[in-house]
Figure 1 (spheres, rainbow, N blue to C red):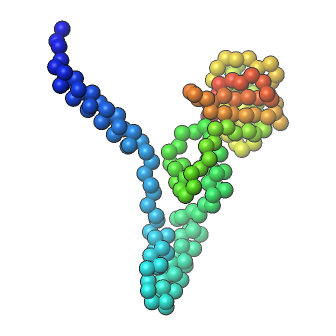
Figure 2: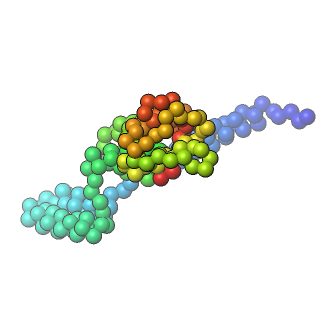
Figure 3: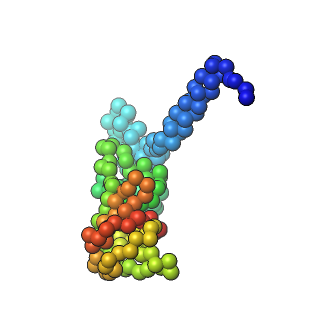
Length: 179
């Protein structure tokens, strides 16, 4: 068996640590740049001449209005951003980071909704559709004491590896979001 010198072991350990640290940094979401139409509006602040600044603002606001009406840009307030994060609960979507500007968003670790439709698939596992359109499927083979029905209360919460779904306060079952 070949013996590795101590220096080689330390170098390998150091390179491994750097590679892991680089992966963590690469996984962080990038800050989105402002769109050109919005940046043009912000650039008007730098104009010192009042008439020039007003003309700049008028042109930039008109351009912003046209872009918003065409759907080229979308203006979202904080409540709409929270609603989007809540609606996406259960999905891994790094593109939702655009909704996290400004204040640190609250951690969303559970959602509660009412069941609109519940049925068992061919594998006897429950599929539950919620009021907000989300569809959750049971992942384990636990048996529910009472079948969920329209109007049942569903609480889905994050677990260490996936999600738990409580239906009408019964024992939680493991679940995954399918839609």
